[in-house]
Image 1 (tube, helix red, strand yellow):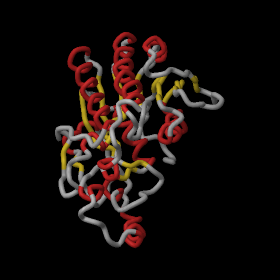
Image 2 (cartoon, rainbow, N blue to C red):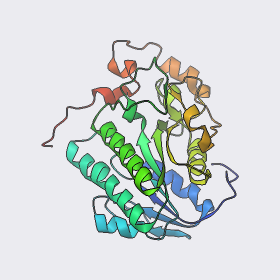
Image 3 (cartoon, one colour):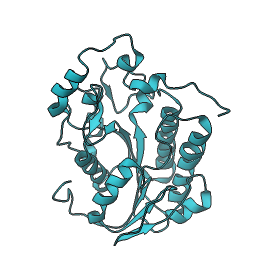
Image 4 (tube, rainbow, N blue to C red):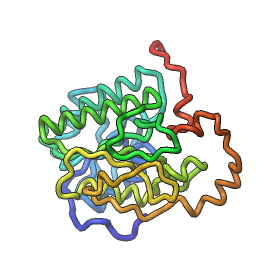
Length: 276
């Protein structure tokens, strides 16, 4: 964990949704030093509230609960929702209806800045031989990626019509360390995650922005130059793990869609089942 905060700015109340998830648990510990009150939400158990924390369970598909959740918050870090490839119904409820409810609640409560946790799976059907920028059209690799592309469009609409600033962060692979050779390009450290979140929350003018959530990796599929105004400067890299990962996977099947496309295994996850 970073020893010093990455900004001197301080908020009164921040909202973190999806606080019981993997990245939510990590940010729960890191965001406290940037605000007086950290409001945490998830449908999964959150344990006991620590000093300076507020716990509020609010299903994303519950419109009234979401409007109450966003009351009196300065900004939102929205990690909530389905985060893997799933049947359509849970994705519809959490990521489609839920994202709309979140932005409506932001509009009603006058919340003007949101970090929307999008995903690299919004553009998973670009090839690993390509480098794409922040203006790359969506090419989702499944229903999950499709729902995140919808969320990016909702964020754009609410910026254009109501002035709500959003960074759509196309998160790569954020773990303590990269797990395979694909993650040499997609990995983001937890420290860089913190740096990115705070850059989004504190940049003077955010507007509507798309930015890739990655560290300063040598292998690159993503070009963040179009989001330079956000001020995110990653400090970590997947390179220290390269030798071990290459030894673990010395050969790759170049006919495997998971090797061809940036979305990895998500490009062959399925099948879609609207009745599931």
